[in-house]
Length: 222
Image (tube, rainbow, N blue to C red):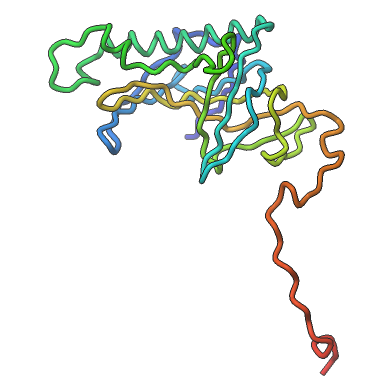
């Protein structure tokens, strides 16, 4: 039976309901622990954030900088929630270290803290800016504007207000690092009314090959 899909507003997230479910190994000696929330996939509707830089595309991935607005109480609270998930993961790994560190009889909390890569990262350029910096497969995200119209990523600019739909997928560990795996199924962008002014479609789409000349005879009936 298919389970219902629940989307949790960021401010309603209760960390005691977050669990690391089954663990399994994938390639390159990576251990992955699936995240559930009340036995469901954890989907979070984030608050309105700021895009810290234009969305860039390299190969099959988008690189997205979701910046916390320091003037927004909702953003401050959401950053605390994300940090809280990191603390939960560190503590859970420490309590169950034998499942994560096979063959070891003891693992210190300091080691786990050192190996854990925080989800919220401080900007290397702006001293007062903190962000969720995400690498998202191009076929795993949809961009919409405030009217629910699909939007090409090339039109999404730095400092645009955005509302993310986030999915905390798993906690992952390799030989030297531990990190949380975030997905971003949807991103809603508040775009200015004059966005398309002076914009040509050839700037954002694939270039079309030049039409071949068709001989006049091909149009004549035979």
